[in-house]
Amino acid sequence: MNRDAGKFWWLVQAFSGVALVLLLGMHFIAQHYVAQGGLRTYADVVAYLDSPWVLALETLFLVVVAVHAALGLRAVALDLGLARGQQRLVDGAVAGFALAVVFYGLWLFTRIGGG
Image 1 (cartoon, rainbow, N blue to C red):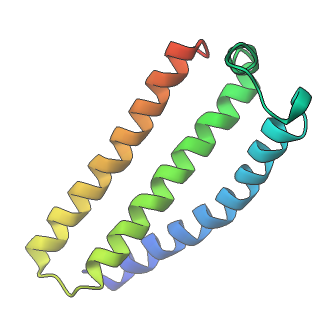
Image 2 (image 1 turned 135 degrees about the vertical axis):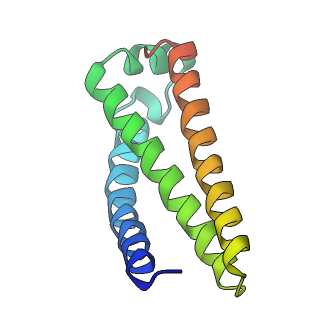
């Protein structure tokens, strides 16, 4: 693997980790401190996701989680010392995993009423 590419993906994972902490904090506050009684009902979630700002924030949270998780899985797999062809297979698999998670989450948002 190209050293510059490895540095780039490491930086992406580091920045996504910082973003994840911030977005998780915002998500937690919105779901457990702003919500009446500490939890939202299904109807509350539908109403909550009707706001375009909230939907954008939750979508960003979903994408950051998927990217961070995929890069973590990739790092663990590459630590095994795989051959170049196997590394490409791992890259494709984790990219497919991340895309599947994001598309499934977006589909759920539209089914719940956020789109």
